[in-house]
Amino acid sequence: MDISPVNLFGMTRPELEAWFEDAGEKTFRARQVMTWLYRHQARDFDRMTNIGHSARELLHRTAAIALPQIENEQHSHDGTIKWLLGLGDGQGIETVFIPEPNRGTLCISSQVGCALDCAFCATGEQGFNRNLSAAEIVAQVWLARRELGYIPGGHRIITNVVLMGMGEPLANYRNVIKAARILMDDFGLGLSRHRLTLSTSGLVPRIDQLATDCRLALAVSLHAPNDELRNRLVPINRRHPIAKLLDACWRYAAGDTRGKITFEYAMMAGVNDSLELSRQLSRLLRDRPAKVNLIPFNPYPGASFSCSPEIAMHRFRDSLRSHGIVTTLRKTRGSDIAAACGQLKGCVEDRTRIRLGQKSFKLAVQT
Image 1 (cartoon, one colour):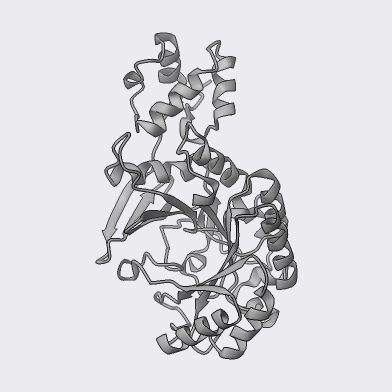
Image 2 (cartoon, helix red, strand yellow):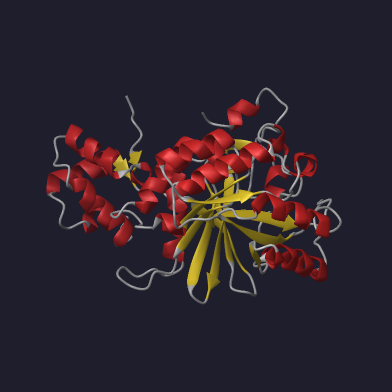
C-alpha cells in the first residue's frame, strides 16, 4: 500500500518524538530535526549532519518538508509584500508581510476562503473551500522567512505573526492550535505567545476553549457596538451576540495579567463612525482590559461600503480616548496591492457558497 510521507511542518514536538520512538529511534531526534528545520531553515535531510544515518534514512523514506508554491509576489510602495501561494489542489491563499521600523508582522491564513460572510470583507465574497492543515499554516511562516532572506542566527525579520489572513481561525480550531504550538515551541519558531495573535469574528465557545488549550494574544473583529448593527456587518453575531462575546473576552483576559483584548473596528462612512456609536462603544469597554484598533475600511471591487473621512475617524478616536479607552488609528498598509485588512482573496476553486443560515455551515466550522 502506498503511504504518503508525513509533512514535518504539521508535527508538534511530542508527535515527532512519538513518531521517532515508534520507528525505533531515540526521541531526542525530534529536537534535532526541529532545530534544523526551523532554526537553520534546512529542507535537505542530508544537511542534518548530527542526525545518525539510520534516522536520516527514515526521514528520506517516510517524511517530507512540503511547501506551498509561490504563484505570485507583489510589492507595495510602502514595503508591504503579498504572496499568493498555491496549495497543489487548485486552491490558493494569500500571506502578507508588513515591515515596520521596530518589528515585522506576518499575516497568515487559516482557511481557503471563509464562511462567515462578513459584509465588508473580500475573503468572504470568495466563498469557502476547506480548512488549511497545520502544516500549511506553519509553512507560510517558514516560506516567508526564506523569501525575506532569513539568516540562521541573524536578525529576526518576522517578529510577530497574526492569524488575520484568509479565514476564521477559530473555525479551524484543531489545526490552528496545533500550528500555534509549533510556532511557539522553543525548537520551532520560538515565538512568544504575546507575539502570536489570533483574530476572530467571535466564536464564543472556541474563545473559552482557547483560554484553556493555548493562550495567545486575542483580537476580536467587533466593528459595531450594538447587536442590530453588528448582525448586519458580522452575521455570526446572531449566534453569539455582543454581550456573550464580551463576557468570553473578559474571561479570557482574566487569565493574563499582562494582556488586553484588542478590538478591531473597521471605519465605514455613514455606517459605524458616528459619535453616538463611539459613546456606545465606550460604555461597553470602559474600565475593562481592552484596547481599540480603528482600521480605515479598505475598498475592493464590488464593495458596498466606503472608508470614513479622516475627520470622522479622528473624532471617533478622540471620543474613545476621552472616555479612557486606549485607542489607535491604524495606518493602511499594502492597499495598492490589495494586501490590506479585508482585501485578501486568494484563489478559491470549486468553492461552496456556505452561509451562516445554511445547514452546510457546520462543514466550515470544525469541531
